[in-house]
Length: 315
Image (spheres, rainbow, N blue to C red):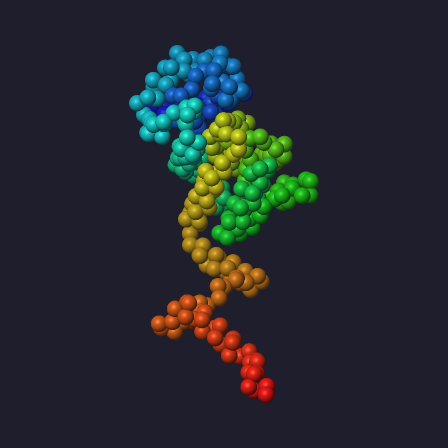
């Protein structure tokens, strides 16, 4: 069923053409949506013709997309997520977004049970140095990931490419390092150029991206792909944020107890920056209401103010 198809795609990956890899990548990471696709819609999503989709499926041993759907029908835990048609004309926007987010988040957490996930955790734990770079609208994702990972993983830094050469990544990293690149469609040019250069230099590479990035697996096996919804006008980064948070938790668990380092980082921040403590709550005497206290304060001010002499006193 689903596992059989995924294993078949991974086994035959090296034999696929560029167009076939686009389809295979989509199938690997969007199994839950296949029953609602046609050859035309699937081809439109990955940028190939319906004929290419049909030919690819026949090479896999299916008569066509309908036979693949039938094969997947008996193994469909995702069906409750599609109780209401996601693209119905009268669909409620909030409900539709919720269903999409649930589906993508489920896909994200399913990645934590894959061989790629285990390999990525091992690469991060064993690395003497970790460099993180992200691009475009998702730049803040990599910056946040690096900032949090620094708490538990020494010698982790965010590479912003401000030197125009990514020298800190390419010249200061080696076989005992790990480079994490994060980007989502549409991809920045730096994303692919840097990924290719890291791979060419033999530096362990991790890529976090979406299912449209068909070339990622040509450079490394350490790829985490999240489904991309082309019908959305804007990316929702909730799923990838959860995925990377889970990855940090897994690195921490595998490394062992890191609370001592976290405590040391906190102590240093207190030394150099400090934390803003909330002021102590004002103490009230029993039985005094807020209104009573306010009245007492006004009376005290009146008593302290200079008093005008009365008419009798002026005489």
